[in-house]
Image 1: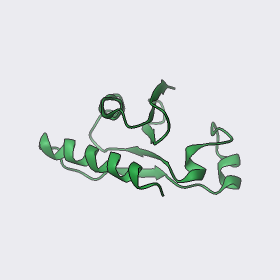
Image 2: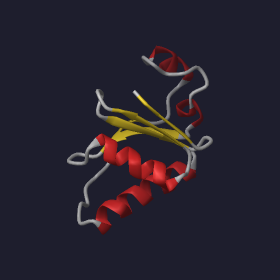
Image 3: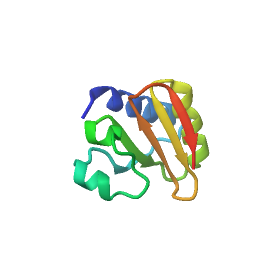
Image 4: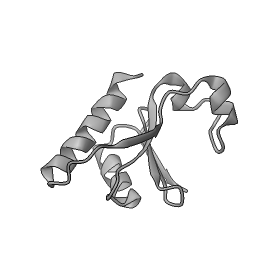
Length: 100
């Protein structure tokens, strides 16, 4: 795994602690083998997941939209907010964002 993605998630946990909302981040997907990535619905061919530079996660009790806004504010890479699936994607790629 790319160590920068861990820094991003450390910053998120620090943000939660600062606002007295300390809780674990639930990772639903991180590194993926290329075959697993191919079989994952909605995954792009050259996903950051296969390079160890992306994590899909949720924070119990924190709205996905709020989680995504803070991750975007960090400006550390890509942020995707998946409202219906209740998770946010963070990666170490170029700064960009999307919603699904």
